[in-house]
Image 1 (cartoon, rainbow, N blue to C red):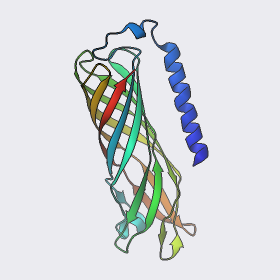
Image 2 (cartoon, rainbow, N blue to C red; image 1 turned 60 degrees about the horizontal axis):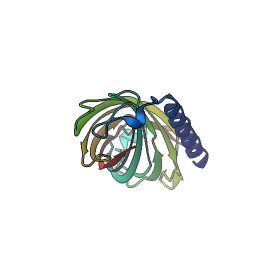
Image 3 (spheres, rainbow, N blue to C red; image 1 turned 90 degrees about the vertical axis):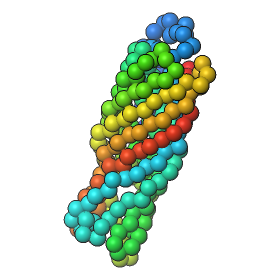
Image 4 (cartoon, one colour; image 1 turned 135 degrees about the vertical axis):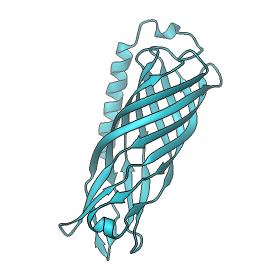
Length: 214
């Protein structure tokens, strides 16, 4: 897990560094009202992760499902133009898996997501945006089990992500944010080398938080 987090942090640092080098020379002189090319937006949200779980194989037969989770999330957006931004979303959760035969235990989920966004009304105080991108999910600290035996899962997942959100400017630098994302993620499970099927998690992520413009 720690190696993966270090890789993600390094990738984020490189992305930010490249974006800063590409920022327009006059970014610092952009107006205080609204968002403009070269601005950085940092948000802290409380999010609810609501899986739309479905499974096949043995997992489907026993009604495997995934509980909701509420966790913090942080994201960094770089405005490449007045309307186009690139956002990196970071957060982690511990999700519990249930079934018709009882609780199956929990697993850690680390799903960094990179999105390309279009921001509407960039000079206004109410700024909707839409985004689309890719999600990488690392499953870690697997504690899944059934019938006294450990359940193995694939540690990695790639999938698309969609987003809609809106920023409400409160001061020149501070804004309130509401955001909703759909993320597709999945993992294959096995026990003793025998496949148990695929669990599709595919959560809807709803968030509310605050942000700052730099």
